[in-house]
Length: 334
View 1 (cartoon, rainbow, N blue to C red):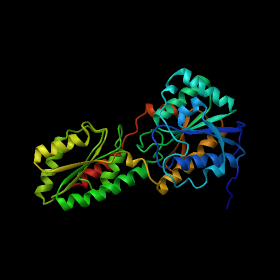
View 2 (cartoon, rainbow, N blue to C red):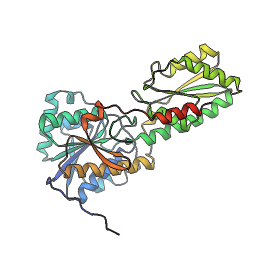
View 3 (cartoon, helix red, strand yellow):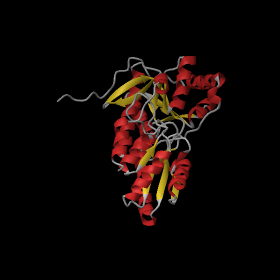
């Protein structure tokens, strides 16, 4: 049996990297930070932690961090580096100040953990200042092209599903219809998976702006079959949201409905094992990508292996929902 390679080649001569988390927090971000720090340290590279994302980078809120600083963090939700949405980074002047701060700290490359907005910021830094950047997909929405899953998605699904299971108990007890809104402003990945796993009667997603009238007929059919309660899942990005769907059901059937908007509860909590493992693999891969001289790419997981996708493709190319799963949701709702 061949022994695993303990050190990765470093042809780029990387000596110091910086890491930040940006945009909405996602369970597993801390596991990714931990992986970056420990992979870099293992290979003789120092790590600078940037607090509060691009805002902190612009303000120079940075410090060296080592393996002990990330101890006992893999199981924690949120991000120990904190995160913020930066308005100053949207200007060339703001990005120039951040680039200068990186140079002042003698940083050779930057790792950005976040979603498409964060990747835009990293891409512009590379384009305008030639600074090596690697993106790590950290967003519960699972909407980035070039990776099968994003860090935080698995945990968000489990959190939403737990709430759906509890609401189903209440709905059955009171013979009510629950319309449950899950996160997903532009993507229905969470809604679709929760709908199948939660046995929902119907699911509404942004990728398919089907008329809400159809759910009225579904509810009528369910009532005719003796089903006194139903679960309807709606992604927040579906036109009209859960409130619109609930109103249509009540007006079309006269049945009592309740709306439950799960909201930011889906962002928090202890990351499940799948997110911890994914974050660990991608954090390690991000350091290796910089060591190999790569830049302006996102590291992802596709088909069990590591992929490197140009950052601009992660938002320019559309990642569709699993259409087979969508069909399955419809088939099993009878």
